[in-house]
Amino acid sequence: MDTKIGSIDACNPTHDDIGGPPNGGVSTVQNSSPLHSITVSPCDATLGRYLARRLVEIGVTDVFSVPGDFNLTLLDHLIAEPSLKLIGCCNELNAGYAADGYARSRGAGACVVTFTVGGLSVLNAIAGAYSENLPLICIVGGPNSNDYGTNRILHHTIGLPDFTQELRCFQAVTCYQAVINNLEEAHELIDTAISTALKESKPVYISISCNLPAIPLPTFSRHPVPFMLTPKVSNQMGIDAAVEAAAEFLNKAVKPVLVGGPKMRVAKAADAFVELADASGYGLAVMPSAKGQVPEHHKHFIGTYWGAVSTAFCAEIVESADAYLFAGPIFNDYSSVGYSLLLKKEKAIIVQPDRVTIGNGPAFGCVLMKDFLSELAKRIKHNNTSYENYHRIFVPEGKPLRDNPNEPLRVNVLFQHIQNMLSSETAVLAETGDSWFNCQKLKLPEGCGYEFQMQYGSIGWSVGATLGFAQAMPNRRVIACIGDGSFQVTAQDVSTMIRCGQKTIIFLINNGGYTIEVEIHDGPYNVIKNWNYTAFVDAIHNGEGKCWTAKVRCEEELVKAINTATNEEKDSFCFIEVIVHKDDTSKELLEWGSRVSAANSRPPNPQ
Image: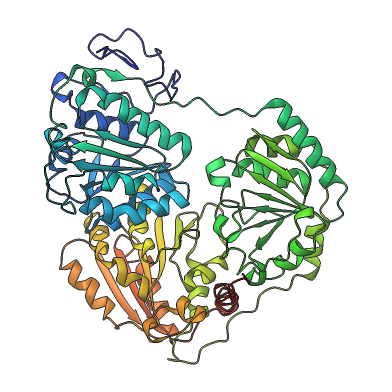
């Protein structure tokens, strides 16, 4: 075996610019300033330490894990890497959600679980990351390499001598799968998996036999070539033709608009989109799942376009435009409000990460979104008619009615106070449910982060994602808005937040049930057992770490709680339970729920 492929000798390094593909399918090139310069001693020349170094190199310095007998030795070697911190989670689902939240901030995330019982538990979180185009590395401690092909039955399986059940499940929700049961292939498979995750911006699966992480091998003693993927390049003829057609299409329009979509993240095109907005003068909106990707302080920003539940006056401007450019949209039943958007294909330019479609006419492939938008900005004529129309009809939103002293708190009053908490040093995470709609109406100041999971919409996502996002960005204060039903799914990892010393503020909105489901289709199954949530968190705290809780029922108590959380308890994990009426919802959820319900209840087509 040639152990020099894709690596240079760490004991006798000659220079740092040797580059080559670590395997036949993924290219690496010279990186004159690698993320981390790592010196490897012979005692660290193990598979486990090699994997740890590779994770650190791509910016993953925290790995979320649940121990199990198949991954314990691997965890020993991950812990031994000085630059890597192991975050123990309460369950595999939350470990996966935490890696999801971490990847949203750092560009990649990782979790480690055990074989099958852990792998199938984390699968739901991996599917969510796949839907959101997040590079997430799911590492599983697998069976002893000697057990492969022996027809033996192992524990943590369904009782069949077939070890591929877990692998087959992951094939549907990852873009690459590596099963490492011999050391000779380990180096190449690890590099290929991590490179593919970064290149495709999707999760990958790595299974490592439990008896391999501690075994030294010369391959692992060598300093690996830094990861740097060959950049994708637009077809120049394609981009020239696409820009010419798009410029002609838009320049003859009277009141065109721009709408940003969620795939701008994977295309790394947010800056190019803003560049086009600056050059064009068009009214600038975002789809709900793209909130936070476009600066809302932009002078031509007109709000969130979400059909019938858009922010005020935004839908009227977008749907009345005679041309609209959508950058990276996803039109599903949720984002289209039950397929009720009043858009016409012949008026639309749809820009996907590597493809442009203009109206009912031509489509151009091999055209990268960021290249297309940047080039289009040079060819577009300035036209601010749509923004002027918006400015002309805009009426500032009214403020919620003032509560009488000690009157039960209303949700719109709560979010008015949350709005006042936002700054460049905060980030908002919105849980699936009415928080989607209330948080959409928050006006994000410059630098304020925002995340939610719209495509997959898994309730409970935000608890683990808050853990991961806050761990990735310790200098920001995360404000998470979570409903009581969602919180009950994944509540345990509040303990991990406290153990990690995070200073997150969770607003637990207690309205007694699954409110978003109520508005789609009500029934007794949407009512949940009420918890004493603050007592629950106090029990988890158990006097260890910094944690502060409050239960509020009126505006006066809310103001006092926020003041405490942002002053004397600013360095503590803060949990504020907000008790509101079960029918207190946003008007947007009422409208959205009825339209989604209508879409769900369509009768079968005639046969």
